[in-house]
Image (cartoon, rainbow, N blue to C red):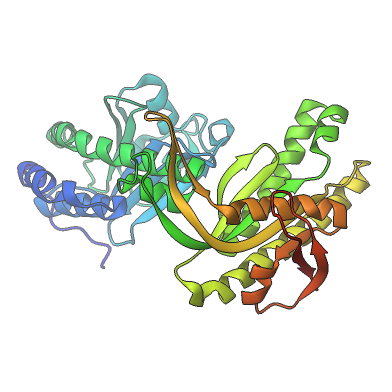
Length: 396
């Protein structure tokens, strides 16, 4: 796409852009395509745009802000900024900080900058901008979204251009709010319930008793002597240890196709879904790979702990495979999405047995039967609640 603009009209009309937004733009479910379409319709209508951005303060465990940038002749860019960005030079004194504090439009003629102006404004001027305008989009709930407009027209924006941008915002606000609320919903679902469970709930699986029978590899892992650690370690140190360990488990599960169902204190209940029995050899292999990764990562972390004079972290993992009911349980107005069935109990009992046998991983005979990874038999053992002794396996 050439880096040149259609001839901008001083008397361009914003109404065609609003018409597109109301009838077509609001139906675009991808935020990047929505921003790109909006900017391109503005330019086609005659708006003198070189750059257009939409930014919002995110509610996300990793990111403080999210933004989408359109620039004439360049691919659309979506970027996130981590928590703590508001304490950096990139933010302090910037036009976006000014907008956030005043909740009022901010404008800079980029040809009249001084050394006191923020570095980002000088960068925009160096990239060809002549006039910069930022404005808040007030929402019914939550923090306002920030829109920024920049032109390379020598005379900058006219008062009529600014007025048209404000008129557009009245129609853009409800579309943006819908996207923000949906993004918030999916983020919270993914963060607290996991991607697969979150998708099912957003797709309507929300009644008590809703569920389905699935084949899955069940994973149950637990820290050793967590009660003792609670007694011996200061609260902050214990919390850091626990979060570090859980991060190792979560990273390994995510990398190999598993998903955390819930944290139970220091325990992790997770599963690897298998669409049918044909996938079980692959899925059990993924579970073994995840277990090996946790072992390696925690070993590395323990070396660093030992260097700092701290005791090592120990844990156990139980693995089983079988059909489980995947769905909603609870009261009529307070539900939990979980897995239930004998397979879940077996995984938990296997994890408990790792303590007695002194190994980090134990898998059931059913798991071994479908797993193509070589495992070593540890003989017959009793599992609490299981009447007959069962053969268990560990890593070869």
